[in-house]
Length: 525
Image (cartoon, rainbow, N blue to C red; front, top):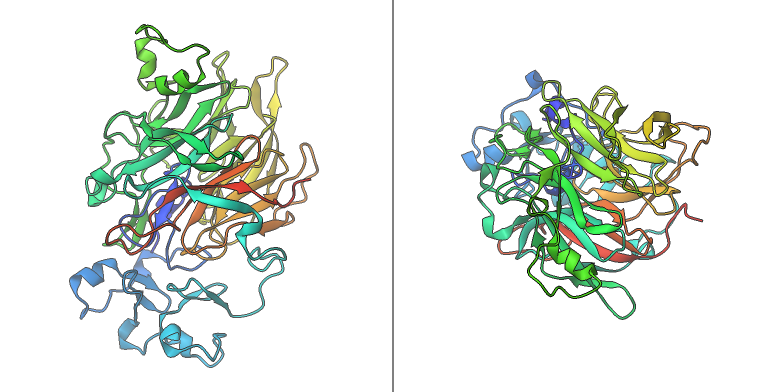
């Protein structure tokens, strides 16, 4: 079962706890805004409903202990994410619901497939093939059944994996520098695997790397990554300063976080837990290696280009306790938007700070968790996701900002709710046109997050209400796809995915970073 207060923080890097990548085991990664891919993969109902604690039952007593610890309770019994077997409850026949005469499962399916199907709101889910067998016609507004291409090749061209499984046991939540030559991302070193909370991945470190290109300007890979965070610290949500790509900011604990519990799916309790280290602050530093690539003349002396303190991550502005991260700068570099989590209530609100005069405003203050914000390309709006209803289903929002006569943000002028459905929708990011967002969603399945695009109302437009904005599916692959972003020029698309090669004895691809050229995109003139 899911832990309500924990999933209320489903957001994550919160930029990432950013990486939902991994599946149903203790290696689950966090989600953007600190969000990750491993953490969302779950054979559970698509409505995200949480059964009360007293409703849970015990796994069959005759199972080996190691199996009992990892099985997950579902409507059809106890699901083993390693073997994909479903053990029936109370000694009943396997998958009793699947055998009902009017269960909606195609009658020509082999019995071994029928036996492993998991009941979800929209039908029956196959954890092996990731197929969804619907129990009725797809809703007209369902993005999975929406008209349009059934292949991502139309949208993403010549995609390449840029991070290496041998170097990182998981990597993700990446962002381009504004000129598109560098990326900043979080990764767990493969060499430290087993040293992290729960004996799995090490804490996310923050890295930068120069991209490599072919003669036509398409990304072919990246150069050796440069670690920019302190050893042992937990990090999330990196960003480049406009006009100064050698100056970066990101969320960091700076030291090893005090919380000993790991984030993600907990085998012993069949719960999800989200880690929001109270030590997390927004920090900034310069990277000499990046500066050397932009200097007009080669360096000929050993004299430092910056103050010694600027080479170490330094807290940008101190906040009184609680997790502070999910940070991004406005296109002109004047404002920073970020999420602050109250350590007592677990409620996250969105703040905007004017870096010129030091003033700040709590721009989005609502029940539940509001986070993962980004400025629009023109700097007049922000996008974000929220669990303000408290049902553990994240919804997408866009807001028009209000400014004073000096150009400082004073709050929200108008808010638009884009989605209101029974899915987890998170990590929204602007297309450079400002006419649409891309985001990750459980629309297909909690076992297979995919990237979708949604149209955005024009600045100052009348709000037509959630559910009235068109949606199109962008990625079509097994495993997690999420944390999507565009380069500023709209030429490249970067996201986190579990679609690479298996490493060692792993039973599924790890979360890694992929980049492709942008093909056609919906909702863009």
